[in-house]
Image 1: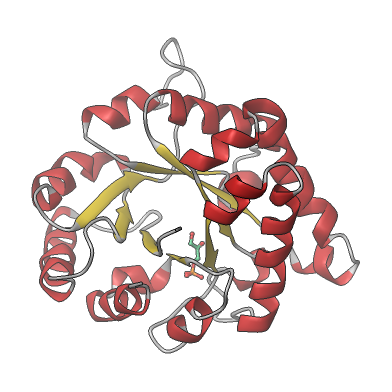
Image 2: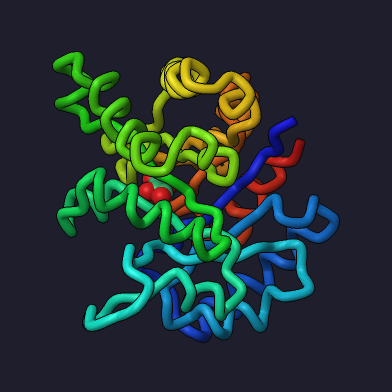
Amino acid sequence: MRKKLVAGNWKMHGSLVQNKELLDAVITGTAGMRKGSCVVCVPYPYLSSVQSMLENTQIAWGAQNVNQFSKGAYTGEVSAEMLKDFDCQYVIVGHSERRSLFGEDSHTVSLKFTASQNSGLMPILCVGETLQQRETGAMEKVIAEQLDAVIDQAGVASLSKAVIAYEPVWAIGTGKTASPQQAQEVHALIRGSIARHDEGVAADLTILYGGSVKANNAAELFAMPDIDGGLIGGASLIAEDFVAICRAGQD
Ligand code: 13P
C-alpha cells in the first residue's frame, strides 16, 4: 500500500533565524503524525542545521537538486554522496524551474535520478506541462517524454524507490491550482502509463501533486484516488499552513 507524503520545497528562501522559527513550529504542529510523512527540501547551506533540528523528529529532510556526477571538477555543484553526508532522505530532481531556468533536459534529469538512487536517496521526480503545451494538446506527449527518459535510463523498477510529482507549470506559484478533477486525470494518466510497463510498480507509486497547494485546497486534492500527497512551495514557508497541509496528507 502506498503511503501519503507531503513535501515542502523551500526553493531559494530562508535564513538561519527564519528556518529555526519555521521548523520549531512545524515540529510542534506535526507532533504525533506518522514519521516520515512530512519532508522539507531546503537550500544546501542549511542542510547541516536542518539535520540537527530534525533528527529524532517525525520530519524528514532533503535537497532541491543534485549533480549527476559523483565527484570531480564541477565548480559549484553538489553530489548525491554529499547529500547523504547530511542524512538527506529525499532530493527533488527535474523541477520545472531547473528545467526552464537552468536548461536541464530530461536526459540530464534521468542521470540525476540515477545518481540519487545510487547513493540511497529517494528522488522526487517532477513532471508537468506548460499552459501552452496543455492548450495545444501536447500535455500527454510532454509528460510521457519526461517519464520515459527516466524509465529508459533507469528501468521501470527504479520507480519503486522514487516519488513522482506532477506539477503543471501554469499552477506553480501562480495561485492557480489544477482542480482536483484536472489533477486526478493527469495522475491517473501517469499511473496508467507506468502500469503498461509494470502494474505492481504503478500501484505502489506515490504521485504527489504540486502547484499552488494551500491549506484550504489540500484536503480535496489529496482525497482523489491517484493523488498521494503534495509538493508544496509557497505554503511550506508558513508553519501554520504547512502543518495543515501535512495533516490533510495523513493516511
Ligand atoms: P507553489 O506551491 O508555490 O505553487 O510551488 C509549487 C512548487 O513548485 C513545488 O515544487
